[in-house]
Structures are given as C-alpha cells and as structure tokens.
Length: 379
Image (cartoon, rainbow, N blue to C red; front, side, top):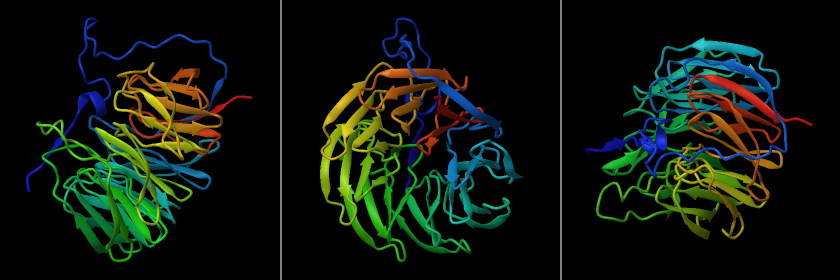
C-alpha cells in the first residue's frame, strides 16, 4: 500500500510559508490590549536542539514532581517541575520523532527508524527497545502493563510494558495524503482509544486488541485528495465519562466512553490537542481561531479570531485562563469566560508547535529551539 504524508506548511511548520504584504492569507498582526494579569517566569532550562529541522511530535510530560522532555537528536532529560533542577539526562543517540510519554516508571519515545524505546524514569537507563514497521509519529503511552504507539503507515502497536514484546497490532489502509503525526492514544479502563487518518476513533481491548467500538468523526468529501483529508491528529481527551475527539476538516465530537455513542458533534477543523476546564471545551482550529464549547451540549460559548493564521498550538488551562502559543513564539493568555486577552509574552523566537502541559497552576512550554519554560500567574 503506497501512501504519502503531506507536510502542510500552513499547518505544521512554524514560519515556513512565504507571505507578502498584499497577501490576504498572511498571519494576522498582533492586536494591542491592556494586560490585566502578570505572567511570571518560574524557571527555564535548555533541553537541546528542540525539534531540529524536522516536523516531529515533541512535548514535555509530567509525572509527579518531575517533568520530562526530549529533543530530536535523542537527548532526554528530567527536571524537578517546581524549580527546574535537573534530575538526570541521557544522550540516547536516537532520532526522536514522537515523545515523550511518561507513566508507571517508564519514559517512552518513538524514533524515525521505527522504534519505541523505554527508559527508566528514575535515572534514564534504557530498559528495552522494540522495532515496528515504520516511523513512529505519535507520542507513546502506557497504563503500566501495555505500551501503545502509532506509526506513519497507519498502524497501532501494543507492546508489553516490561519487555517491549509485541502483543498485537491494528492496521488500516492509509489514505494517499495524510497529515504528519498522530495523537497520543488514550487509556481508559480496559480499553485504549486511538484516532486514525481515515477519520475514525476506535476503542480496543487493551489485552487482545479486539475492537470494542468505533465511531467515524469525519467522512472524506471532495474531489481532490487534499479536500478528502480528515486525519484525527488531536489526542483523544477523557473527562469524567466522556471522550472528546476532533478531526481535520471534520468535526469535534463528544462520545460515551463505554460504548462510543455520540452525545453531540460540531463542525470544525483542527489537528491540535484539546483542553477542558469545568464544563468548557477549548479547541484551536486549523485557521488559528480559538473556540470554546459547552462540553455538555456543543454550544459555542465564545470565539477568539484575533490570531488567525498564526499557527497556534493546542490550548492549555492555567488557573482561570486558557493559553495558546504561536509560530513566532508568543504565548497568549485569555479569559476562560469570554476569550478576551489578559496577557501576552514572547517565549521562543522560533515558535512553539508542540503541545504545552499544565497542572492548573504552572504552565510548561517547550519551544521549538529546545527551551523548556515554566510560567504561572503572579499574585
């Protein structure tokens, strides 16, 4: 089966498109506003080269009091997430394309050569390595017994968390054109939930890979392969008993966790991870508009369209606010209630394309140049 991964500059690569002053598609200029909160830097550390020159799925991961991060050249480091003190670092030598995932004592990442690698979260020692069929384009995940990861050829692999031995795999024909990258698979009870480039979300029995339910988030439409792209690159999000999923050129949906039945759906287009706070779901759309939905009904609460075409990443919740970062490295903070800007700060001149992380009080931003920073709202 032949397939082609489409790297969309206007979606995935920070600043790769060429614009002129007369081009109506150029990124929107930043709007002026009066800040109403003080965004304070807690600490900053250098992880390495960041994303390097490639388009890779790199994001930090929090586990307890430690935050982990990796760069494209195989440097993996662990820091105290409150003060930035380095716990350990390893030069693994791998070309990392998906990472890092952390849970149950494992630090996980995927490589360009099609490997999933597990390190000890205590000291970074390599525990095992497993060869898959092609480049790993998702952040691997684990529930302590099973490790799962997705590859660029449309396959989902499940491995033994202790040994890396392959347990089962699921494969679906890959469309001719796909976005580069997949969301991180989600563990929920005895199931693992993953999204695919054909627009489907599928829940598998973690132990044997049997399909428990599946739901088509988006149906390919249009004459061209570009028009028919409906990749689910956003990671499925679990909140209480509901799974939220979204596709490119498709919809955002709320699904019953146990059986996959839809609770509501709304038309949208995104390839970024989602965020939720209380009864509000936040989505960074493909055109860089931020939309807040009522999580119980799909009703649109507000939209912020003042960052159009600035290639923002997925939203993250910070206290009573929600934050996104753009291709020029500006961190934008908005009110959760109405989407109005309350603070802005430039954190990385090359941009921030990967997902940010938050514990609710501290926001962790990993820039494309390899700087990991922690921010909080000052009293």
